[in-house]
Length: 335
Ligand SMILES: Cc1cc2nc3c(=O)[nH]c(=O)nc-3n(C[C@H](O)[C@H](O)[C@H](O)COP(=O)(O)OP(=O)(O)OC[C@H]3O[C@@H](n4cnc5c(N)ncnc54)[C@H](O)[C@@H]3O)c2cc1C
Image (tube, rainbow, N blue to C red; front, side, top):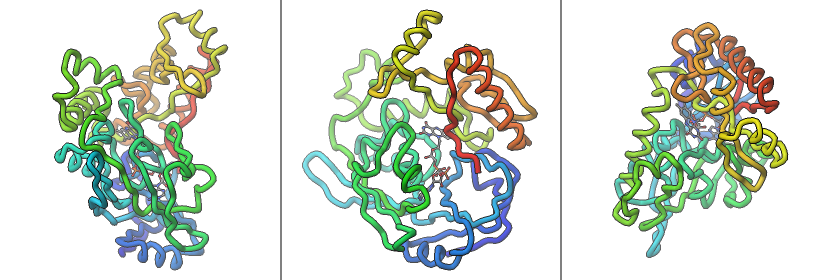
């Protein structure tokens, strides 16, 4: 285990805020995590992976707990499936690259999303028609109340759109340490998303491999999203609002071309479209800016403060509310 005091977080999260943490502690096993929690029982602790879904609004006065448990192994194999156990600190995209090289299918659409295996289940990360929940079987997490590792079935994790029980009822109870994913040897390539449909138009899906889809996803993302390390950001700043059908019908009367997707909870409207239509594209506060190629992303163009980002986010929310009467909810966690 390593413990660092009064550490700059500039390189430890993706928004590039110039803030510090009182403690940064890394663990290499579940036992070390238990030891750290006991040692810092009088301080506030927060698990952190790559810090790619966080905005530090000020210095952090507690302990940031970072997993350096980074192994993955095949657990069991059937004719169709391979079950992989991956540790929480492993970079999700490194795992996906390895799986795609073996043509194990199911996670390739999640390629190039920054972040760790542990956070991927907390967030239920999603992209191009696939979410982490589609491949998660079991989550192992240290229960801070009992100090034991619990085995949690996917169906008990209440996965939803960028959501899970780890963000609500289990918020301060569990620290994820390992995840079992179920991958497929054949089929299961998901090309439903519009972006992928156009790349593979006319191509027989049976001729494709996981790596073909992975490469296409990475190309699309590189054209749209800021590269980590080049511009500070936390990806999509807001979630896509889901509104009632009656509300949507009124919106569609005024804006017949509004893009939308039906879901069991209501009609999902792309927040990027709402933001763009409200005239927010390119809007800037200090060095924080609405990203031109994907207005759902707020970027730090260099030297932005958290106050700049928060004010910009508020301005975007106000404009969308004024024009459409829709509240945008933040996806990014303010610390
Ligand atoms: C350029 C860019 C593009 C992005 N694109 C996407 C995208 O397409 N789809 C998508 O869903 N997201 C996207 N994101 C958001 C982000 O990458 C994901 O939310 C990712 O899962 C965060 O992983 P992380 O390790 O950085 O988590 P962090 O930001 O470090 O943490 C996120 C949350 O998880 C908690 N947490 C972290 N580790 C653990 C653990 N071991 N146990 C319990 N809780 C834990 C933290 O306390 C925090 O609440 C993007 C971000 C960026 C910067």
